[in-house]
Image 1 (cartoon, rainbow, N blue to C red):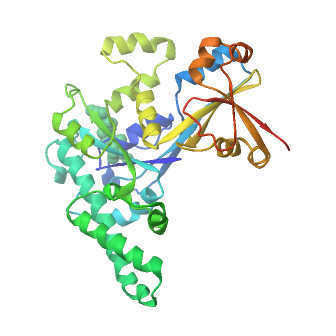
Image 2: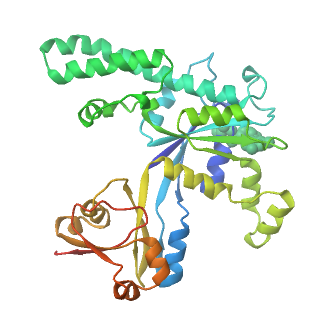
Image 3: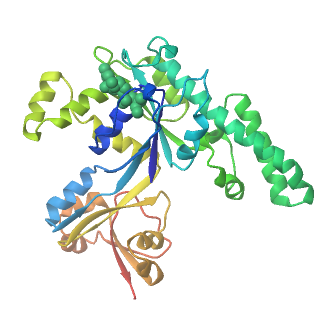
Length: 356
Ligand SMILES: Nc1nc2c(ncn2[C@@H]2O[C@H](COP(=O)(O)OP(=O)(O)O)[C@@H](O)[C@H]2O)c(=O)[nH]1
Ligand SMILES: [Mg+2]
């Protein structure tokens, strides 16, 4: 699962990337003209996993991970050169973070003008819509010919892209389009950007920690969670020894947990859930799409488990946490046996029974 970081030059994407991954990617200004791609994976913090570790004292611990990709900044809206280079990398991301700058930055291109995080978000939104409009128009041009064969799917695809074009011209994101699963299949290959899920990151500088109401409104209108942090300061905090961190954060008046909050928000934006396997050997968090069945979850662990699936023993996390051991849960009659089509809940602790 991959989350793309998108934002105007000097909004702090690479700083955020470094904070997230502990890497030391170059944060020199966009003016250097480099077009590099930074990729790194990050453990998703999960308090439930911590509790299961406490209960099981396992030899091995495995978190779920998501990866982040950081690209060179999108050019500002008057200069769309370079946008085409970046789009493919954004297209194959599962979700996007829109980073907006709310701090003075001498290295920011003068063309960007005064600090205005709301207008930055709007610029990014139009860039996204513009890119999708491009895709839709290109596709319509081809389909014009292709649909003449009478192929039902081509005709349907044409209708969908016509509708998409109309929506984009009216500044609507395609995530608002109602499509049935068959329709979805027809267009899934195009990686339409405005159909993705988003997180908005308000990256603020000194004295600007208040989130502008307009930004809250804009983020909400696209259904995106909003996280606010001073990425540079949070990064500085991570660089000092762990035992001094709490005191340092207190002196700065910050909680120091912005990184975890952000990773969590990005994970949630992906619309994934976690289930757990827990024992003395290993406590592990696994990821499946919301709505996945027990059999599908088993397949995440091992393909043999999916194939030979017999049943799942299910303990909801809260029950596990309360009764502490599997034995106690069973004695209390709180463990359920579920078949292959059971829909896994976020936080389920699973034991899969299968025949090899
Ligand atoms: N004051 C302040 N400066 C920041 C913050 N985040 C990034 N910067 C600075 O802004 C410049 C550009 O940051 P960078 O992460 O390279 O931006 P990018 O072009 O979006 O990747 C660097 O000099 C950073 O140190 C922040 O939250 N506050
Ligand atoms: Mg950068």
